[in-house]
Image (cartoon, rainbow, N blue to C red):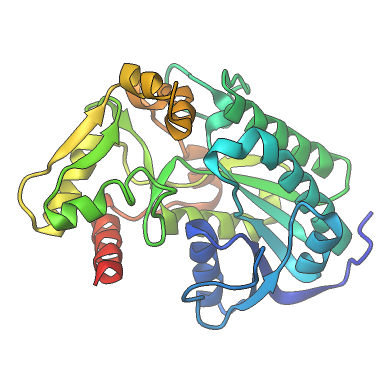
Length: 320
């Protein structure tokens, strides 16, 4: 049972201040909500105007409860270093779940698609969790734990899942971030992975945030996982062409590392070892179905051209 069920109706808490946390905060502020942004330090470069900052270690249930106190809805947008997921995500999830429960806050979990593992055909919410790697298994375990807590009446939970995302503030966390757009702006060669001609669903970070906020405001979203809306599935090559068009530096220049190379480098380079586990996403069609969300709540994802324009403009401004 929640220890402090008193909430402030117009206050929401965003746990994590990376690209997704910032985008969720922007969306909430635009709706007139009061926003508390939470990270370990309580400090943030260029925080969204109007958001309050709060320091908390979310692996500590007491600190997480204090961070969520008074919030009507808590949005879990935090992450840990990619190489540390199996070791560090379970504690982050456990502390956050207990903290939201004690505070009486609804919990919206910003998840990815790793839990499903490799699949044939579109990814849908009714697929079994069949992850073959450590990162996918830890995501599956967390989602299962959260939904079991909801069914047990401990905390109201909903899960929003997105595919590989890009957008403002998505730098090292995005394969279309620091490895691609700065190179395009400088007229240099970008580094990508996999087969650039395979269909792949990409999610614009603002569409991801908009989807999570919709889930956080609708009771019928509770107790379920949902795929947030994404623009039409394209190929990496098509998206890279849009990046270079917006950059205005000529024809796309990129080098695509095939799976065997990524896996080979993984013997020596930790981040490549982690990427190697997920190469199935980049060597075969990876198409996400968001029709369940669209049927329930509607969907109007940002066209890739418009989303890439905003993303490239953000990177250009940051470089300037």
